[in-house]
Structure formats: structure tokens, C-alpha cells
View (cartoon, rainbow, N blue to C red):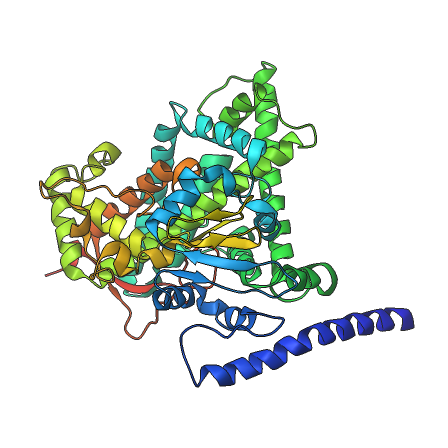
Amino acid sequence: MAISILKYSTIFSIFFILMMPLLILILLYRQYQKQRSGIPTNWPILGMTPSMLINSHRIYDYATELLLHSGGTFKGKGPWFANMNPLLITNPLDVHHVLTKNFSNYPRGDTFRNIFRFLGDGLITSDGKLWEINHKVTISALKHACFQGMLETVVWNKVENGLLPILESISEHHTEVDLQDIFQRFTFDTMSKVLLDNDPECLSLDFPYNPCLKAFTKGEEALIRRVVTPQSLWKLQQLILRVGKESKLNSAGYTLNNFVYKCIAQNQNDYDKMINGEQQEGKFKFFTALMRELKDIQIDTSVHPTKFIRDVLITLMTAGKDSTASALSWFFYNVARNPTVEGKILKEIHTHFEGKVGQRWNTEELGKMVYLHGALCESLRLFSPVPFNYKSPLRQDILPSGHQVDLNTKIIISFYSMGRMKSVWGEDCMEFKPERWISHKGGIKHEPSYKFTTFSSGPRTCVGKKMALTQLQIVSSIIIYHYHFELVEDHTVLPAGSMVLSMKHGLKVKLTKRSEMN
């Protein structure tokens, strides 16, 4: 007992000694910030870390302020012992250079992989040969002839059996509802069904608690904290103290692994029976498509096949669930604040689907709705679900803007900030204007991917873009067709400090069924 007490006493003493200078500087920084604004102070030893930590709860808006103050490019300074000097960029030419033209020089890097170890070695975190294998396997499975049909069936089933009944109940009882919670449940159910052939049924009238759903949220909040914290500090929390965000991240990882590995085992069992001729193939399953793609690919012997599948699925779950829920939430927030936009979308829906009420609308036809497309892109421009991209250079480089990149530089492309730059989108960049995406001839206007970066650019362009747009088009059009919605008065909507751009306090709205209006 005495040895145990001594052990923890020593640990906390070491932690206190390490943290004391930081705490003192944070107090000094708070006082200093009262006297000035703009570029943060570059403190001895700790660099600009205090300002980053203090503003971590509003990190994306803070980064935007720094970038606006610095002409679109900001060079930060990390602690002297951490080798983390961030270079925040928003110049489209620089972005094109990093993501496409000089792609081979800008991998994710070990620092990114350590931060996002939670996700394993999937598409988001891997580099080199492993990334190429991940990319080939995932792309091939997503492009399977039966995948899009299966996806649309799953989405429409969830709309008809989950989303619409819940919205009907809410409107009948005239209660407020958090649309973000509904969309997170919706996308968790659809992505689980599509990828794992398992519907958790989170989107139910009783709004059941699901530990996996909460684990994703807790994990993403902890990950963004790692981005602005020196690795030595968050590893101290993780390995020795097991407190704060790191403790929640460990718990979230355990919960998600338990769920995903259980689903993999069931799918593997069904796949083995099919291969051995014990049962017929039946309906298309994403897991089966993955296994068939893996059959002819040589994976490093150090990579366990089940672990590889786990990493592919966790990556797609994270990207597909959270980014789509984020996109839907911010879309309805923007539409609620712009009733003229809502009216134009409703008119377009009636024009395209007159006499087709009760039918499942064709996604090809939905894709022809120019104004809806413009409104979705405009919302994605201002509120990119993935707010940043992180790169580590292999060699020294000079960006087209003239900024020097050395081996200790960590490139952070702020997608969130790019949508707020007058130099990129013009003087009206903060206005919500779907017309921005409509050509003079009335068709869809396309922008280069290194300017409109929501789905990234270059070889690492989002592989799930079509999957995301399918859900966005179906859900947004069906809700607007059936319901008018208003933001709850005095409800504050702010971006959360998270890996994905979710809303800190949710999106509380009141619904009115259109058939009951007037």
C-alpha cells in the first residue's frame, strides 16, 4: 500500500513540475490577451502553445482569425522540445501544390499517425504501400456494380422506417428536437448497415442510448486536443496518468473495437460458409466485396488481415457517419436562417417530382436539382465537415506563395478557413449564396477541388464523395418537402472543438408539417 501511494505521489510530482511553467505562462497569457489582439505571443520554451490550448474549444475560428490577420498564411511556433512548427495555409495554389503537384513530398507522417492511432492504419492515416493497398481495396469495393443500389435501399429504408416516423411524432407533439442528434443516429445506422450489415437501430422513437455512438463523439473530441498539444504531454496523460481526454479516448477505442470486431466475426463466419458452399451468396454485402478484393493482394506479413479489415471499416464508418451528419446539420442551419433559399429548394422539388409523392425519388433525378446542389455546396464551403488537413514534408520545399517549408514544419490546410477568405471566394465570402454554384446558363457551376476543398484534392480525394452526396440529397429533399423548420429562439449554434465539425450544443429546431400550414 505504501509503495503504491509513493508511486502515484511521484507521478503527480513529476506531472506538477512539468505543468507548472505552462500554467504560469497561461495565466500570463490571459492577462496579455486582454491588452492586445492578433498574432499570439511566442513564449520562451513553449512557443505559441499556450494560446493554442486556451483556444482549443474554438480552434477553427481562432485559426481563421490568425489567417485573416496574416494574409491567408500563418507560421506558428511550437515548444522547442516538440518539433511541431505549424504552417497554416489557405492559398489555393499552395493547397494544389501540397495535395497534388508535389503529393509525394507530403505524406501524413508519423506525427499524424500517432495522433490518430485511434483510427488504426486505414485510408486516413496510412502512407506509402499500405495506403495504396487501402485505396485500391476500398475504391474497388465502393465501385462494385451492386454497391450504389444497396446504399440507396438502406438510406430509403431508414428514411421511411426511422426518420419520417420520428419527425411525424415530433411535429404532432409540437416539441423541440435536436436535428444534429437525429442525423448522427441516422448516419450511424445507415453506415453500420452498409458497411457491417448490422443496423443498431439508434434512430428509434425512444432515442435509445448507444455506447458506440457516444464513443465516436468522445473519441473525436479527444483527437483534436492532441493536434494542439505537444506529444510528450498527451502521451503522459495516456500512458501514466490516464486522465482527461486521453482516458475517454481509451474507453471509446475499447467500445468501438468491441462492436466492430463482433460484426467482423459474424460477417467472416457468413463469408466462410459461402466459400465452403454451406450457404448461397444471396444479397450483396460490402464485407464480401472487401474480402474478394483482398484475395489477390499481397499484404505485408506484419499486418494481420482482420486488423486490416477493422481499420478499413473504422475509417469508412468515421468518415461516412460523422462527416455526413455534420454536413446535414450545418445545411439545415443555413437553410433555416435563409427562408428564401428554403422556398426555392421546395419549388425545385415540386418541379422535379410532381406526382411522385410516395415513391422513392431517383438519385439521378435528385442530382439534376441545380439549386439544391448549390445550397449543399454553399453550406459545405462555409462549414466543411472535415475542417483541416495535416501533412508532414519529407524534404525541404518552397510553396508557390514563397513560404519556406523545412523538415520540422507541419502543414495544416484549414479547409474551414478557406471558405472564409475574401482572397479565395470574394468580398461576399461570408454570405450564404447557392447562386454562387449556378452558371450563367442555369447549370451547375464546378470549382477546382483545390479551391472547394470539402472532399480534399489530388490522390487523397475523398473516396466516399458519391456515398455522402447520395445521403445528403435524399435526406435534405425529403425533409424540406414534408416540413418547415425554425431555429429555437436563443439557442446558440457554435462549432465544437472536434475532429469533425459538429455543433457544440446541437441544432434545436421546431418542425411544422407543410400539410398543416396556412
